[in-house]
Length: 419
Ligand code: UD1
Image 1 (tube, rainbow, N blue to C red):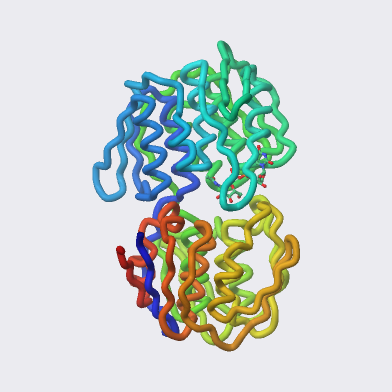
Image 2 (cartoon, rainbow, N blue to C red):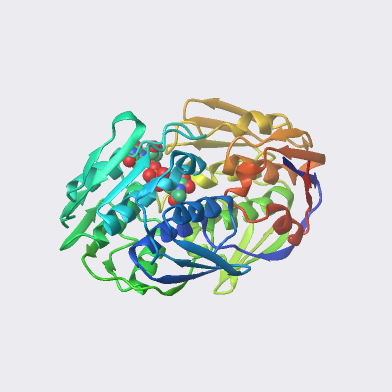
């Protein structure tokens, strides 16, 4: 059991380098299965979810080795299975992303149903109906997905919602299908563009990522490659919000503002001065944040649901009120009760939350409820007087390499306590 101890109330000053993106590296690790070769991933973040993905690859007979602080080499030539155990599936809900890749490589796959998570139900109906469109036979009785596809055939697949995971799963399956697959109403997240970049580096023909129509010309033999994972836009958003919360001047090396423009737009409205260039993003904030217009989460390029809790934490001391509308997940306000322990004034009604800015926050013992909710507690703690003890930090480790290290580099008093 570990805790994060954060002493708030002082301005930040410093710089840190943004880790590789969790949501990019997970589908890329699944995609390594398509190559039957050796892949060197640079800028690979060391995260609990990456460890879980590596265990899935190893469970399938592949090998993976860290070659340095952030280089992971994966060799999928020795793949010998097509089943992922229930225990491994439970470790990481986004493991459904392995379905398309295993199916493309082996012609069959067996995975347990990912089920719900901290954020509420986590259906994969769009993944399954898209794979069925490509010719997969899927039997999902008894909580286990038995999938078979002697031959996947490319065609147009229309998603009824631009799901990130479904788009990625279909891109991977389509690499193993004959002919051309077109994914209509595809998700447009930067991580989809990164997945296209990786697949292209392996010799795949994929185009359109970043737009609503992604095309894959399947049936090509893919080879290994060396690829650098894009920087994590949500980690960058977290540290920008940390500066807005505590005040101060920070620089985030490698951060890319073009991936974050809806977040930086709100922070500018709150009074932060933000500049960016090819090196990274700089942010200077002083005093209490100003009130901002309502923030509504939506698929990219809308405001990211993953930054909702974090931004809320940054605005707890705003002058006025801030309204949030969560449109992506049912259960994404679980951090609110914990923030209230620190003196926050937040009212939740259905998918809306209203923050009424308070003058002061105070340190308190708080508990992480989920990954980004946990990060939000750290952001709030930086503005709170006294010490905050954040417990159940395992959630945070799923997506941040070492949040205490990064916050210290930014001038905060933060340490990890192993119990
Ligand atoms: C990804 C991100 C997650 C982020 C989310 C939304 C990864 C590993 N995770 O998750 O951090 O919060 O995008 O930006 O990249 N849905 C269905 N049926 C489906 C699939 C999704 O109803 O088959 C619903 C979900 O319940 C949710 C919404 O669609 O309400 C968005 O989900 P989706 O875009 O698929 O998110 P993930 O890929 O799971």
